[in-house]
Amino acid sequence: MTHQTMHAEEARALRADRQHVAALISRYPRLSESETKEIITFLRTGRHLDVGMLTGDEALKPKLEAFMAEHKQHFRLKWTESLAVTAGVFGVPTAAWALWEAFA
Image (cartoon, rainbow, N blue to C red; front, side, top):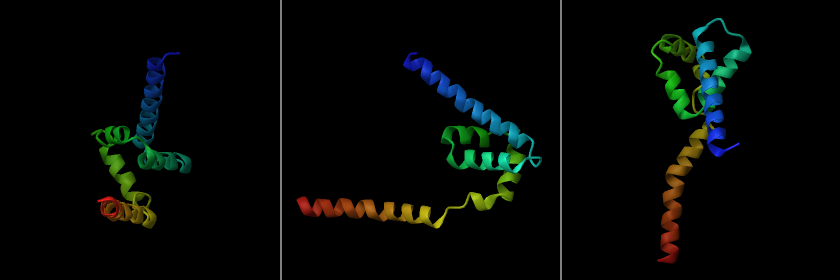
């Protein structure tokens, strides 16, 4: 199997996931708990391009907005995520400055 064939298969699998989640959202609010978790997982951890394509779909927009409003607690930043961002924003420049001072 060539690299190009493997890449095409991966792209088809990702497209199928996005299409599957789109089908689930179109059925909202008639979803099982596992289907709800599947949508939340996709929206939180899916590739940005796939999530963007899903959120940009005008036909799904009303149901997706209602879903996200009902499950907004799942889309908030956790305190650990906030801490990581803050550490990155302040820690990386501080470390770079310290290295510069150490070797300059």
